[in-house]
Image 1 (cartoon, rainbow, N blue to C red):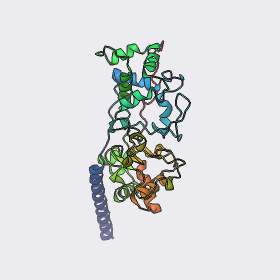
Image 2 (cartoon, one colour):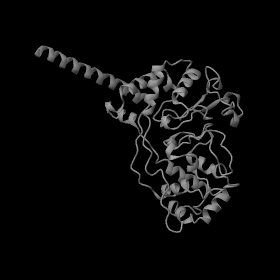
Image 3 (spheres, one colour):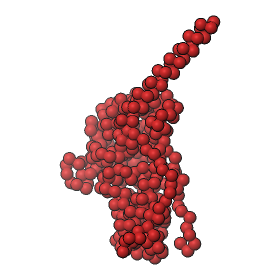
Image 4 (cartoon, rainbow, N blue to C red):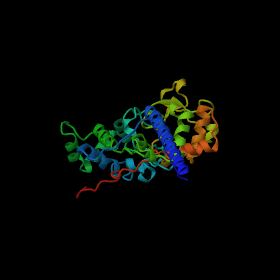
Length: 331
């Protein structure tokens, strides 16, 4: 009897050691291909405080009702569950609004990679989503709202601290604090229990099927450009109502037709609908479509479900400071 118990104990220890070894091997592979993100404690500088105020202030818009936050909701993890957002002119955006969480370290922004930095994107929004006829009109609106003291505090060395350029810089500084590590990062840090067995299988399937070829790095994408539809035309699978030419719309170069910035997958389980036109509501369907049109693969139900389970491990907590600041008296 004791011999049977001892044998059972040895088998359990051997299985545990085998599992631990497999976890360590998977961790090494994932660390090499992807990597971790970490969130520092929120300690706002005057620049970040200014950016937070401007990001949430609907008064800094042509209609007095639109802010950066109007297209990037906390309940949607910094994205927009609508296919297209509504700007200050009452018009719909041409493409789906992606999440801003974790986005400031990307080498370019927006689906067409036509904004090189977060500051560039925010400054451009003055005559874009904010609806002003000119950037100067946006700056004038900030002056009327008594923003000058906050700009002076944030940019004390500038002779003209309240400017469109500094509007963009401050908002980008605030957005840079919106980092959302998840269970995957805890797994990479050594916590074997951070991912369940299905998620570990999903991570293996994600790597094994070649998804990491484009969705790599700590953000799982966001750093490269790729044609959407390598194996077959994307709209045959997405059911898109309109065929978007991608970067060709900006560059007019044939090699840029149907080329888009590869989206990062951080918080992807919370940021539906998917793709540049929000044409797909289901994450599992989006995974199957990507395997089909990019890799020429047909995923079985088990592989698709496990990849989705793994992608859920890329969900982090919405930062507590992703909310409007308290307005001081007189603001």
